[in-house]
Amino acid sequence: MKFKVTVVGAGFVGATTAQRIFETGYADVVLVDIVEGKPQGVALDMLESGPVVGTDAQITGTNSYEETADSDVVVITAGIPRKPGMSRDDLLMTNQRIVGSVTAEVSKYSPNAILIIVSNPLDAMVQEAYRISGFPKERVIGMAGILDTARFRTFLSQELGVSVTNVSAYVLGGHGDTMVPLIGSTTVGSVPVAKLIEANRLEEIVQRTRDGGAEIVALLKTGSAYYAPSAAVAQMVEAILLDRKEILPCAAFLEGEYGIDGLYAGVPVKLGAKGIEQIIEVELTDSEATALKASADSVQELVDIMAKA
Image (tube, rainbow, N blue to C red; front, side, top):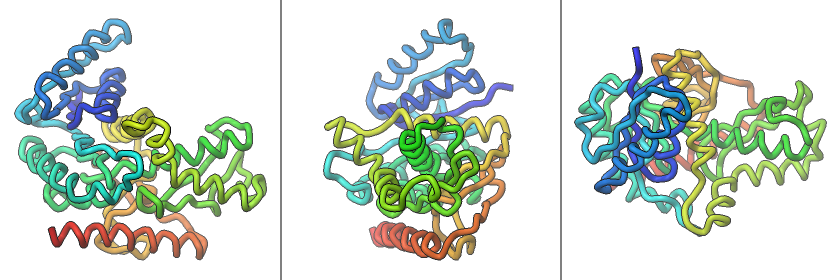
């Protein structure tokens, strides 16, 4: 049986995500956008690449939600992009309205879907999608930790001149300035990273990871990252569709885990056909636990602002 995946938002992140999923051949894809003709044109262009990349999957572009009905997974990338000098928090109110509206529509047509939220500010937007959809917490997930961890692993591999596959790491917490790379459990070829990189230099790499999105925004001048974010989403979609039971850092709704209750935060989870099938609690150092609590407090502030809107 072929799966069905909807991607909402035909901007760079959404379109590239749709392309990555389409090219696997695992699922037919529906690409939704409010701009007339845009999703249709993007989808047709991708469809015509099928004979070249060797996939018989179908991809459809649309401006309405009827064609998204009965999707297995819905990826929400819709929202205004971050501009140079704009923090993720600046996006809050506008994207709250957009994500809330999209969530209501896709939930109506695909009541059994798993939702993956990509829109920023990520942790607040996935909290909003959870509230609006009324779905079980296991089926509303935020994409952030995989991306942040990929950036961290990239910078460490470059620093040490080793393959990225030899770098094992997790970045937890909110997707932004308060994210928490776990130095204590980061290893390179099973060797603790703190034994390989001097402390001050390691802190510079951690800070570059936190600024990873902003660095790309500043370089591009217009637009933001989309190749790495779309790759992270595609990994999540594949883990769900193929029931991989893969341990990945994602934004999950916590109910006491890590001392956080009633809030989404980036933590390692087991991702499979049911969505988040288990929250993995890794051992944190005291400083990491303190940083994770501060990150959660930062997300809570945004959630409180949305609640008053």
